[in-house]
Figure 1: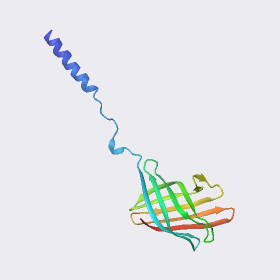
Figure 2: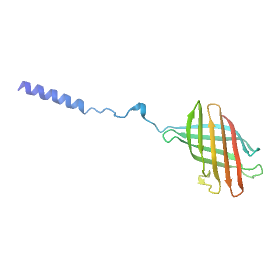
Figure 3: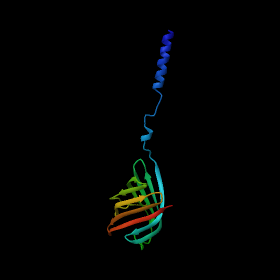
Figure 4: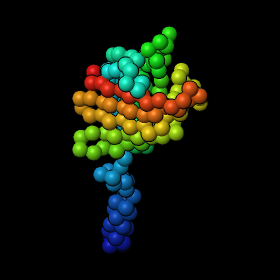
Length: 156
């Protein structure tokens, strides 16, 4: 009887260790959904013409999706444009290479006031940024034709 109790006690102990919860996920291979926001200030050019100075640009990267969004504040498409707008470029894919983050995309519609602006299409978008600076270049297609647009700035 004593031996049976000991055997049952040992069996119970073994069973209790079996049900101890260990996280079966490998933490080294987990991709977390981190969001990072970087802010830059610089100038916007359409073609060779400076159209807006000292505008702020934020870049929000999402590590889990490997995408990022760019928001340009107070931007113009022409120096004669009477007002500025806050314009977003969403869903750029990015990679990190030699200390630079390179975000690209094509056939993207900008957002203004949270709404897609379907009358404009951004192609060959390339955004390169690092600890000090950011450059953005793209082709903008609209019913007015095709133009190039670029931004060059420093981290704030």
